[in-house]
Length: 323
Image (cartoon, rainbow, N blue to C red; front, side, top):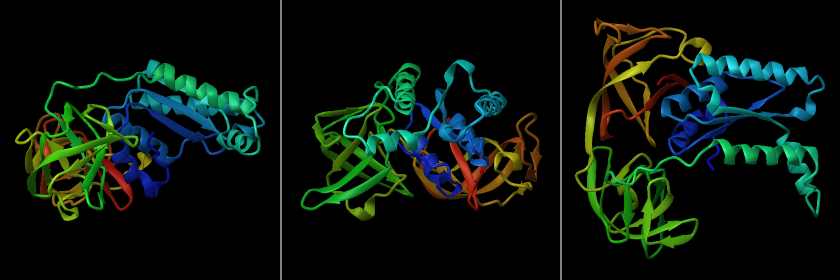
């Protein structure tokens, strides 16, 4: 479970969180309906490649006219259709999280027949039924984007994150890459949910104790990988969709020299757009207008681990600009 608040100030946390997700539960208030950040979340999870989405229509206890539930659901369906979400991959549940929580807090014994508890149980059933365990890539060389790191006195540095592919065992040699540098290390221990493991596999959220790494060597956004399996790059070419004002993006076009923040896997780095091309005929242009699909050449301020078809988002001034 990864919590990604919908408030605009937390969207950047949502981006790095979504990289680790196999499915998504999008919570929408029935009293407010879809908000600009609702569309932003949908665009981002679509870009990152999440297909299975459950929509939880919250605060149902405040709704007197039940027709409003149908109205909000239809409004959300229109947005989902606009961004080409598959109908059979999206499911709706309504309820009141606060009412269910209050019942749990104020009761010695949970009343599983209570209507609000039943609705939360329906949500759990929906998760089990409609968000399948994905196929894990266990064949390709190990790679894990680092979400966080911390030190254990007398032991060393632990890197945490979700294993993107492959597997890792105690004693394996790994390469730590990011921000223009790399360093060889080895695995001293692997933990998941406070239990030591002999091996971690694709899809596992783990903590890996590393040999010979200091706190200054490692930061969020770095990559752990099999030595020499991934390279550092400072420049890349990419397809980019520029969000419109209605989607929470810019009001105006951006031009050559534009310097937003690029979010790739768990990294967040400044880059400069040095070239813009039409995605239709590859003709060079000086600007990209909201709503455009373009090709861009980008130079990052530092080299990071990149591979073909890595998805990303760009942000500026608290807004997602494109993906």
